[in-house]
Every structure is written in structure tokens, then in C-alpha cells.
Length: 154
Image (tube, rainbow, N blue to C red; front, top):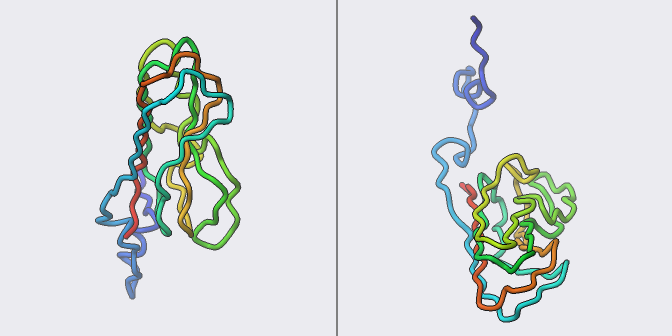
């Protein structure tokens, strides 16, 4: 049986020791949260619900979408607009980078991030988070859509 040192552990045992980012050891999780109460029955493919921006330096560790039924159809993705990473490299807009296919058609849905591209993604500038309809709704009036993104930024 072998032991393998993770990159942050290796920094702590190096001589001289190297600094580990505070957000990666003892990082505090913060949440971005948004709630939207639908004002119409029908939302078209591509309609967006904008939430607060992730702050500069945020590293995403989880995301959630919860919605009442949006009629017999109504699928949402959760993602971000174009941005940059911590090294200044361009990050293309990724409309389902956080959650793909939250299907609220016919019943309430609660979906968490699993294997989406945005897991552990870091942002080098404030970045717009958005929920996007990928399938039209047909009975959303007065229903509530909520989303939250957990991140560290220390």
C-alpha cells in the first residue's frame, strides 16, 4: 500500500514550507442566493433569470436549483456569462456550467451540482450567474424558482 501526497499537503511538509491558499484550507463557504416568482405562465427557451454576481476570486464548490412545477414543461440550466479565470484566461459563457437540466415540468424539482464543468471553477472577475430556460414553460404563473451557489473566497 502506498501513500500519495496531495498538492496542498506537499506544500506543508516542504522545507521551507510553502503557503497554502486560505480558501483551500479552513476556507469559509459563502452562498449566492436568488429567488424569482414567475409573473407569467409562459417563458420561452432562452429566457433568463439573473442573479447576483459571483465575486472576483470565487471558487465554486456547489450549486442548487429548486422550483415549483412550471406546468407540463419547463427545464432550467444554471450557469454563468463570459468571464476570466484566476490566471486571466478567457472563460466562455457556460449556460449549464453549474446545473444542467433541472426539469420542473409537472412537479417540483430540487437538483444539486454533481459532475458539471463549474465544480471547483474559479473566477478572476465578478461573474453573472443566470438560470436559463432550455424548454418553454406553460403554467409557471406565481411559481417560485430559487437557486444558490456555494463558493469559497479566502
